[in-house]
Amino acid sequence: METKIEVALRLHNNILKNQTSKSFYLPYLDGIIENPLNGEKSTVQRFLIDTGASISVLGRVFHRLFDEKTPINEYAIVKYGDGKTREFPVYKVNLKVQGVLFKDLIVAFDKQMETHLLGNLGFINELEHLGISKKRKKISLIF
Image 1 (cartoon, rainbow, N blue to C red):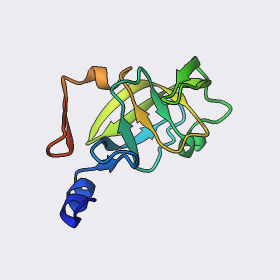
Image 2 (cartoon, rainbow, N blue to C red):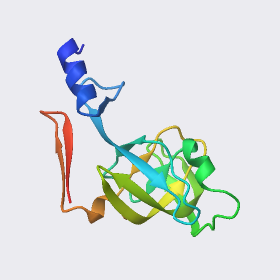
Image 3 (cartoon, one colour):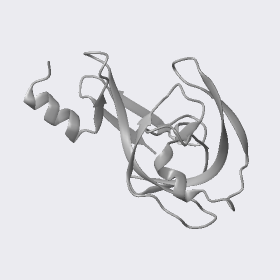
């Protein structure tokens, strides 16, 4: 059971607690997605950092960014942790995190997913370092 101080620190440092484990935390970043073709922007959203994911996946709240005129670059087969695979359209988007703009990220769009994942392709592999401190329960990005 977390103390009030632990909860406050976890929330302050943008750390999501995994409900199935007492010690595993999922770090996240706040960011804004933009469709570079039509200029549509999202509100600030939370993105889980998934160092094991080869591609970033956007969830259902981004449906308004991709209209029927937005070209689909290709389709990607994504395998989630439960072992299920599904095919999703792939788009190029811009991502703004901590004032830094990442252009032309390749993302899959899963209209049924509630959360959003930032994976290696076009995001994590662009960083010099990705530091996650379990002790401090904080993530830091070094560009």
